[in-house]
Length: 286
Image (cartoon, rainbow, N blue to C red; front, side, top):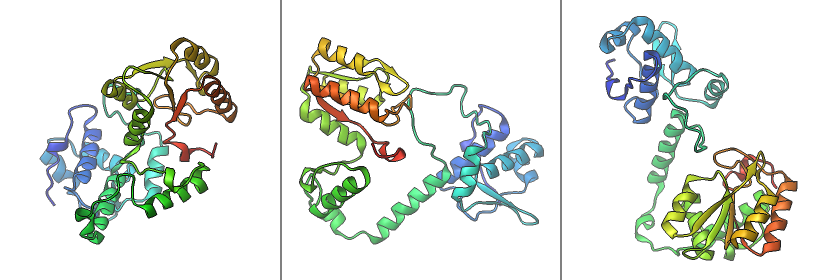
């Protein structure tokens, strides 16, 4: 088989890693599909102008990443990816210099080609079963009643969140939900307190909605209660927006004692708490 990886090749880093990343991108773009046989090492080496050893290392790296599978006597094939291969790669500590700098300013999940493929498969399945009402019907802004009821049961049973279906609103993602929560209680010019290192999205919202965002000292567990108390007295905020579980970008998670202490400060000052707990399912219920 002949494939063209040149549109996906990057000049950064070792050539074998650039080829492995190009394979990953070609799979993500749908140019290479599961079950496709890759060219022999020598053929691809000649096409890319590299050594056979470089292609061999690239295929080996791609196999560690779970992208391909080498079959003795049959060649190298695009793999039907599975969690075991992917987990092994993530735990392996293999150096992956994707860029000259490592950006630690924002936390985000690892997203490998297997996620892209399954996401596309899920969308395709949804499209196959979609009824005309998906496009034609006009729905309540807060969501259909049965959807809100199911969401309510899930929130109560999984996270122990109090409330009922009437108090639930379906949002177009967490960023949309955060915007609605802030816009509901915060006016233009109001002060909102948050962690000294906080999510990019909240910073962007402060510019869009026109409120003043003030950072509060943090430690290994997140916002420091004493610092929050002092900031509340100084700035008289309208609201406090906090991420108690795996704060972005530091990854700090509040203990139960810290959550209780922070809640006591907020109750004492009578300010709104907007809890951005999008990572709650990654930790035990708190």
